[in-house]
Length: 389
Image (cartoon, rainbow, N blue to C red; front, top):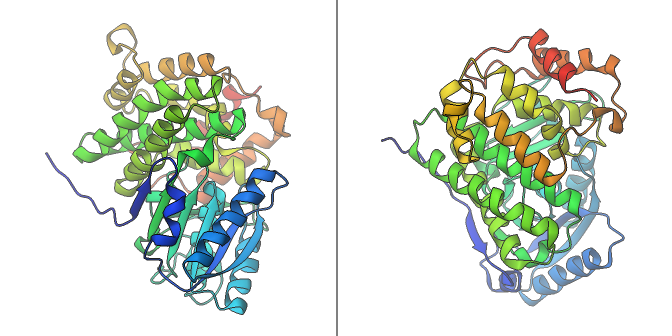
């Protein structure tokens, strides 16, 4: 058995624990609060609540409310300029994965020279090392990305349409407050897409791990089992605090930890490419759209690994062709949630756009370095075409 782990983020997890913000040893005296613009009364009240808690700790706050789903390099630049003008010395990501990912990128550019894209390590990025970042505090309102406990930030370049990863140990949040009470008002579609994102983080990391690092498999199985059990519950009962708690544990801790230990597969890269080129597509939706065809295609490459995660989904590998049990398990779970066969065309993606997506995923973003197998541009195009509705 081998274990290789580094998980430096302090986690404050549990219902009602946002109230402890003022009592924490915060990493600065002036916070830039990075969040999305929302007309929802509860989101406005949450921002006011956080500012009030910071005031109780004698910490000043400046709010940047310009983050959108699939946050952009332009938003990072605007917020970083505001942070420097205001004298901020740390960043709070308040909201879902987009707000926290943006907070990480802002924190990085508060301490690094040049342009943000100089530090993207794939695609047209400059691949420079990320050596410094201001401290980040994550306050999560969703259960999905795992960015609360991992060293990644995903940002979209407006000019190139690339949605790329930034990664460095300095991007781990110093503190992550994960309070499931903040998640009960999430709309049904966001709840489903984020839960599915968490499931794939865990499953893909288990596939890539090949049973080498024991903790990856432990966290992956724990995450998948809780998503399977509790995601259907909170879809029916959005205010079920036990279900929200278990989902947050699975997504924001267990799946975050798997990503801290090893990378996901090119399934995620293809889905991110779709999101970069078509920003209206929710990330979880893009994963669902291509999942079954993706895992059918790679079954011959990693049959044992797919049967392992298929077993986590409750499918007996003995009753299926080698490696096909994971795709079967996904189909059953998607049917249960009512999201099987999500149409790419609903988001303005035309059949004629598929070759450009495949080209970008393989030749611009590059998928060769993350997988245990080699998918060609033709392979990716075939996955997209068979998934198209």
